[in-house]
Length: 327
Image (cartoon, rainbow, N blue to C red; front, side):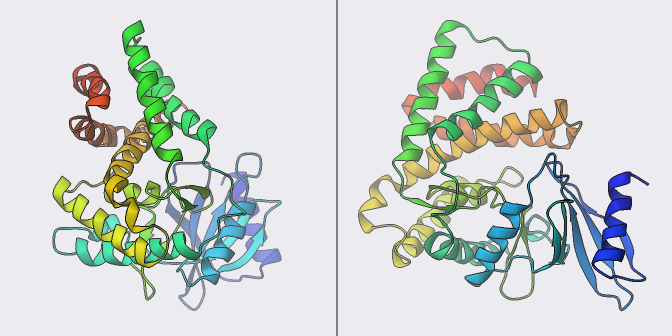
């Protein structure tokens, strides 16, 4: 048994006081964190998070869980925590992710719940205490596309004109993100981090990287999900429905309507470039190849948007001609 798992069991037994429990892996994660399901003697369950302190900081998770729970969102209750060791014992929100249930018949209801929760996050969630989603962070994220997908995974070298084109696209995406109203951004608000749960639904996970940033970021994470895709007209209908909800919540103003879908589209391009780079990094750095199959869908969003924005035409052509055939 690995040393971290031994230490976790010792903590649960000696510090938390659990007896006669069963421990088993609960889920994989695109980070160094691991999760275990703890089955108690009475049949109840908990989730134990193992976040090695040298690689993961528990403090943001604990702080943001308290803040989001305080405004009525369904985040896991913290039963016990030892940040120095990197162990947390959490409420078990279940095993049914949005991705397991989303289909043509359920999508309106499930997304309706998720969008209502997002309006709460953006209107009354934490903001002042969060790191800023600033230009430096936006550019570091897009560099993952260049460094890990283009360079490490595909071994592509761009010529001077391609490099100039890509730099211009990055400038455009940064400017669009920074001109948007700033809200609490979950940063991974998608079908693998939302659970179909008892009311209030959804159960919300993986919020520890929250920042204060662009209003459309979480919306595009949800509606242009790297793991499931919907027809563009339906996505736009959901997005504009959220715009109306955000206006009612005071997050946006009616005057934002003219540029809202442009913000949404360009934010999606920034996110999908980042995500494709992360998926490549997970394979090469972390030995997790399971996300490589999601790269074509993720870049497909970029190609689709680029076809509607002339200033992104070069990026779309690069992906369509030189990347997708090799993925």
